[in-house]
Length: 605
Image (cartoon, rainbow, N blue to C red; front, side, top):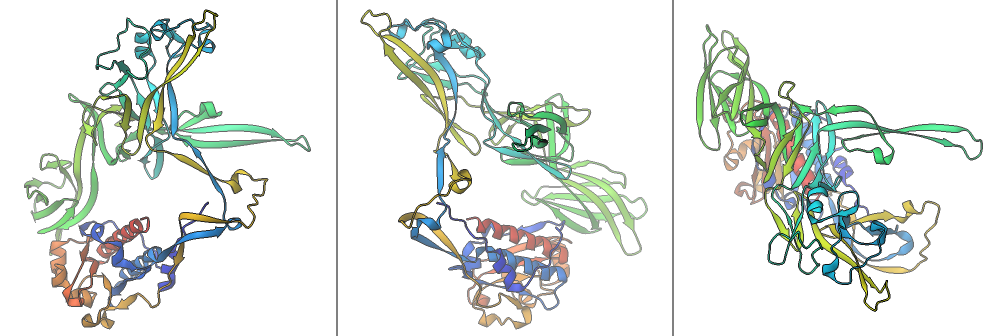
């Protein structure tokens, strides 16, 4: 039975009429408490639990930010009601298929269909013929099985990562590969190859050695095409249609042909997702320590003399500028550790390292006027250099297809550094869990009429998801030419809920001049700093922010914003406050976008 959750975004739009769309701002959040704001700050029992306060002197971007926040809040305005009984004819019918099983790895078989020989063994230990799988047939010994049967492609589409090339984003598959599995006996020793017969299911221990379980990602994307010609049943005319797919995987078996290469690896300026980390590539190369990528965040900004700007965890300050030589004294400070370093740069300085290569600065321009001294800096921060053999989220890195001259990269292989051992192998990838079990299908029959049964076995490793996994089908889609008639029978339903949108009883936006602190009866979202919002000015001390523009400019920096959350504020009867503000309108816009993102996260819960 399928129940669709109704999006409530339209409710937010109805509150304020319409929203003014705004382009994404380029500043940063110097302080961001958004992750600490709970859902019940915004809504209670599906109804608004908050008022949005904007200043009478607010800029258009502040008003647009408040409007967009109100729209986002609409996605939270609903209540859930559990359904206990429904008429079946009113519900669509969904069936499910168990897709927990991923695949099988062949091990050993003396079945006639594989060997063209009737089984003759009467005891397990007599299963001595070379009926181990060699990658093409059951015709090798145990040593041949261990060395020749792999790599085995465990899964190809269970997970996907992103690569951002220029302005385009592409999906690439994570291919889970096993290079080698061996068997141990019940005492933990390597299976005795002189036996040549397979271990029984009760005594086998499987072992994947270190670095033999891998994740492989290819950063080469092809444009695959498939052309089919069909003949009309009535007129006999033909129609040819072509279909295209972008994929890093080989789709030949599905009838596709690779027509051209859309993405031939990644390079400087591109972004890749590896496991659960994203890296903005600023360099690719090789040195005495091996192949590497260099990643970091890049930003550009004009900074006045004797002023600062914050980039991530780093504060970049221009201490002074010499008007004649145009030399610049620059200081970089790690805001987390307190470590700082100063360097004198010229107007031609490029990629100057600070703080042991954590930050690099390039001077892109210097302006010296009668009353203004400022420099334009390109700041690369959060720099890290990742070599072959380093680890990302616990997996050992091996970059592939590195071209140090062209500064391009074709892919990455990630190796699990630990041994995986047991009667059942539990394999944990970053987001999925697999299990591998040793399976024996056994049959007995007295084939030669000597009153003793012969033994036939088919042995394989079963690869399954660790948790049950199902694929769901709506019968209305599956049975396109059929009508599903379930009559008027009532059915008892468990765990199914309907969603009811709760329209707001009153407007949730207020002008600052209409807010009396002693009469506040809900949580507040303050949009705009103390210069444009009188309520922000009144609560500045309680929120720990400056009261004037110069203070914001000094502490926060131009173009930057803050989200400050205070769960209880005594100045407004103990209700909570969220401040969404910046040194200027661009900073407020940055903060508003971040709060919208937090509300979007809460709407998914």
